[in-house]
Image (cartoon, rainbow, N blue to C red):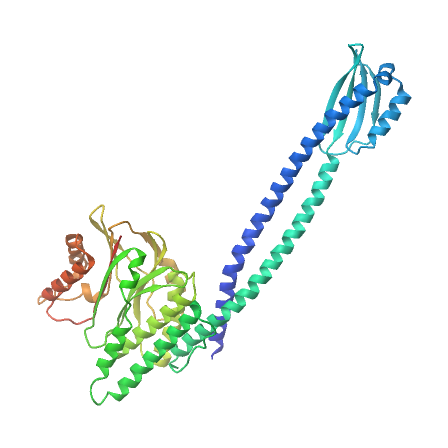
Amino acid sequence: MKKDSVDSFHIQDISLSLKILIPTIFFTALVIPVFTFYLIDSQRSQSEALLEAKAKNITYLLAYSNINTLWNFDIEELQNIADSFFKDQDIVSIVIKDQKGEIHADLQKKVLGSKQIIETSPIEKDGEIIGELQTVFTNFYIEKNLSQIKNKIIVLSLIIFFVITFFIVVVSKKALKPLKGVLEGIDHVAKGDYQYRIKRSSNDEIGQVAKQFNDMSKKIIGLQEATVKSAEAGREMEIAKNIQMSLQPSLEKFTTFGFEISANMTPAEDVGGDYYDLIESGDKKFWFGVGDVTGHGLVSGLVMMMAQVSINTLIRSVPGLTPEEVLIHANTIIQANIRDGLKKDHHMTINFIKEEREGLYRYAGAHEIILIYRAKEKEIEQIPTRGMWIGVIPDISKPINKYAGSFTLETNDILFLYTDGVIEIKNQFSEQYDIKRLSNFLKTHASLDTEAIKQCLLFELNEFKEKQMDDITFLIMRKE
């Protein structure tokens, strides 16, 4: 295997690992401060409430249990009392004033803390207020304890974070190992090694993808062998046509995604270069698209099948990819195979679409204008696709990423994807059917079900054309 191919696998491994690790890092970085703040704030509120209650009780106890001493303002005895209360780390000051506000005693220890609680209580003698007792309490030790708790929480959270990160790295590395085998298989097939088989280590989603990949490789080998064996008998094109038709998706299995679907592919020769596909990815996302290889015949059909194998394998084996990423990776494989393997200059126009969420769809590629019949407005919306063809240059990431976009579909909206064989078909006056006629047709027949629309369009094209010169492929999807 070439070095650049191996490097691409390593990059793929890293990107998938980062897709797992980065959300974990962000989530942990968000949760740890929020959790720490909530816990510390809750503990602080509770501790300060207890401190306030404690200050009230001690002040009241000091004022009423030492009445004679306070009455006589006996400084020596007051100091003894204060010393006994100063053993409590939270009380920092005791002040005694007479009725006129003159301070008779101001007993303090070093004042600490960012917040102080001041409590006062009257000094009474025979029912008469003769002075006032004032105490000051500090929250220093509360803050000190909370700081220690905070440090412990942070240390524990970091330990948990590193344990989770280590676990994810180990698990993702193990999970990506079979995926690497799938990508290696794509590279082998792209270079013409259809004998290569992916080793299945499990029966999970990746294992199923490996099985489908191996089955597709066998079908391609079958096409090659059948073509060689039937060359003299003139049946090679018929065999290729049958294999190509067998690779078309079953429309019924995709109705669960909320669409009424009909499709058509009529090649100009026995084997065509047009392509349409419907795919359910490993993460249960709905993908669909239409493509067209230049020319028609056996070589175009082979390029089309290579594209289908590559795109199917990428979507099914690597959850979370965007349409841009799928086409960029598929181009790397197909371009090398066309230029180096087949020694041809074919390329492929293609537009692939992914359902991001209910009603929202992401598209990428360069192909014919996307047509959407808007049921509410009863009008046709046209969405140009200006990305880049597949198979022309090794790296198409810049134009593909630049022109990718999104659109929405509402109930009863009709999405119409097609190849140029539909709008470029000519009548006896060399007039093309063109996009204007197609748009008017869709508006006129939008009330019909998709299968009826399909049959009516095929009838109209057949009546319009003088001769079919190109493959005719289209996909009709009504949002339910």
